[in-house]
View 1: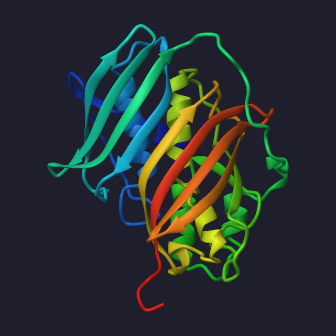
View 2: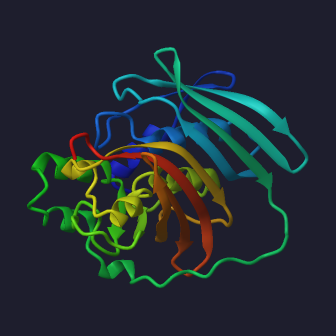
Amino acid sequence: MSEALQDLLDLLDLEQIEEDIFRGRSRSAVVPRVFGGQVAAQALVAAGRTVPADRHAHSLHAYFLRMGDPGAPIVYTVERIRDGRSFTTRRAVAVQHGRPIFALSASFQTYEDGLDHQAPMPPAPDPATLPTSQERLRGYDHLPPDVVEKFLEAREAIDLRYVEEPPYGKYGTPRPPHSQVWFRTNGKLEQDDPLLHVVLATYVSDMTLLDSVLLAHGRGGWAVGDVVGASLDHAMWFHRPFRADEWLLYDQESPAAYGGRGLGQARMYTQDGRLAVSVVQEGVVRVPRGE
């Protein structure tokens, strides 16, 4: 296991300070605020810690309320909404400086047999044939060195590989609003805890989901200064078991953007073609004033 991956696992391992109250550390992301995927993942950890071990997360719905301060801890309070025979529901609120910055509702279910079908996996090249983040980012002379280093530091624990050029790599000309990345943790995980793998997928899910919005308009994003953005809400459905240390294809598209907001929707597939996760997110996508 890489040191960066161990650091990420430590970041997601919350301290319990009271019944149904947890505290998490924070760190800055590629922008001077807490990375949204970190808050979502930590909130899911907090909710999951209050659920029986035989119940697994099958969905979450969340709102990003305020910008997180990377210099301060985050306190997570969990409300036990429902404990049914098959389903358990929890609500987790992340608080900093006395104000909520994030709210999540998550549902957990005991395993049961049922109907089984899925959308087919779209075509995608083998991840082994694609450049790593290091290889891509080191080749972008138009990006400031500090931006490149921030990207690499933020993704050091995750092996993330774009199928085509990311928005900040090639911009100025609109492209189809569709993006694909392969990802897995940068190292094998010793733990088989299903919640950990779901939490790590949640963490990664906020990294690239709005890329397809930018592609549709030929925008490069914050890295090149032609867009200001932030996540607004986030929803995920976990369909089948998967491992976050094995390749997952993140197939993303944007059906609409309007009113300073853009919508991204996506699916995560295992390398052998099983649909594991569905994701939807809306975010603020604003053009800087003066353009």
